[in-house]
Length: 186
Image (cartoon, rainbow, N blue to C red):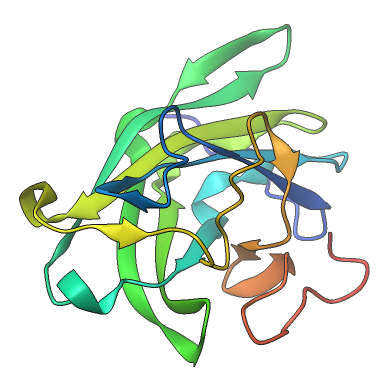
């Protein structure tokens, strides 16, 4: 049998850096490509299965009723000693309507991790290269003005417009409409 997972850190400060994926800077695009780096700045491991990350955007009325499809191109978690472990099959996504829609976000794409993804060791990071599109690439998104989109993020940049939750509680970022992570959590 597999050894038990390491204990999780209920108070580790976590941050999210964002980069738009290669070729994803056009105002209108058939595919949105948010890439994340989640860093554990605490002193204990943080179980990935307790974390969810939301990218906020407008689904766009012109093709808003089309189903959306998610692809994880690559995901890894750093390992003590300078290596990393691929966790691509352990990343899942769901799409939802913003609880309080704004002019810049009526929807979100949320990623989560299976227990098999393991933990982010203290002081290290996990990276996820995501993309999503409308069914069979049959619709487009207008990224300009979307809450989480930052066309200047050509490398990993801290982004409070990407929100991170631990066991359902906001610990990093600011949701559209102004709900921010409590002081001391991030």
